[in-house]
Image (tube, rainbow over all chains, first blue to last red; front, side, top):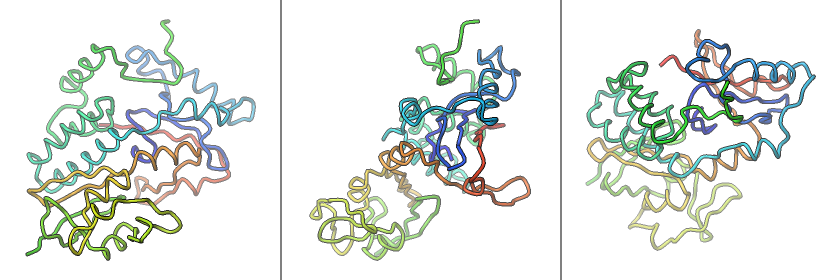
Length: 157
Length: 135
């Protein structure tokens, strides 16, 4: 699904209308404020917008707005996904050592793709919830990059 | 002398006979049966779509150079020679075009009881698609 929809982190949400068309592209939204302190993202703004759309009381995005907000997959991201596919296949067959260079290469090709970088940590013997994860997040954010990239900037409140 | 190459592509895997897994060359028959493309005078064709290709570079002996093929289709090809496995990824162009069409790509996934559900089953309803992970 990450490949089909160009997802690079979780949570990722999309709205899809009754005709099967994307009415809101990949966005970052949480179902509650459990992680608000950590992420800075208030779940309520999205939930209010979502409720209004479902009830027919508020708009989705126009097709033009959806396209303008989409981040379409790049060649490097697709190559990273191919490296991930290969590495996963090797890992599943007990060739973890031989898989490792492919995981590393995937991370080099798409350092912002945490579905790969975080999603493969457990099978690589790394901790996706602890120090190993925080190390890659800190490296990423200290280089001036955002870990979560919601469509609407997070307010400073 | 030939070896078997496992080719991972489009969510499936096929084992094909190749002379050298490091420089995979596949037969025109495998091209059609595994990837659905056929080499025609006008290029690589699938249905009504044809992609121009340098046939001198593509044709290698009795077969087709998989790397040249992948390049012509703008699909990434990565290999592991030791285990004779290759992954042919999806083209960023194809993925981007599909998403920009705004038609939500269909998929089928199992629920916790193993029952399969497709996005297209939900047609006629508004859908909130949420991708999450427990890591």
